[in-house]
Image (cartoon, rainbow, N blue to C red; front, side, top):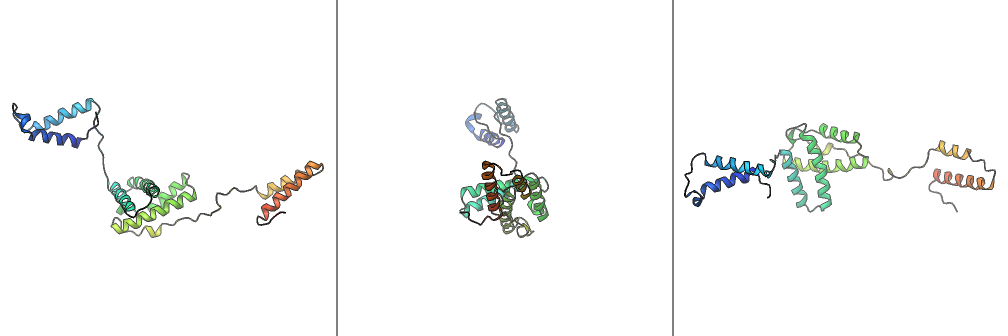
Length: 210
């Protein structure tokens, strides 16, 4: 048995009232629809087959409209899913502080981003999310959902291409490592030479050692 919604029960009660073959031996009164509805409701509840009510808010409609727009401009499926995830996160946060998008300001967006940064968002993630939010608020301005020019104020942090590259040890640690090797034995001499070579290429990364 599939779950049914309250709307489906109401529609079935109306069909039951207007079907003449069902009422050949029974009289239909003003309370017939409500009686049918209550009996059907109890029966489906007994079988645990009532769908939970789905509530929609203005924020849900904004997200659906923005996703339809993303499909219409032929963005890739991956991009659309990424946009949906980002905007959905923001709107879930916004609905806890506002009743409508029209009251959201640039300060709110900055507060949201800072909150996420404090929870562990990396600079690259922040930059990506800011780009998507800027795109969303540009569309919101076109649709008239907000009168604030929020999109132009969302600053995307600069992310270095080599930010996540592995970094070598600090120079003071390198000096301690070099000082710990006296180079007395042949093996220590070779080790000391390799340490100096690696330290040199670290300080002068563009050099070539032949």
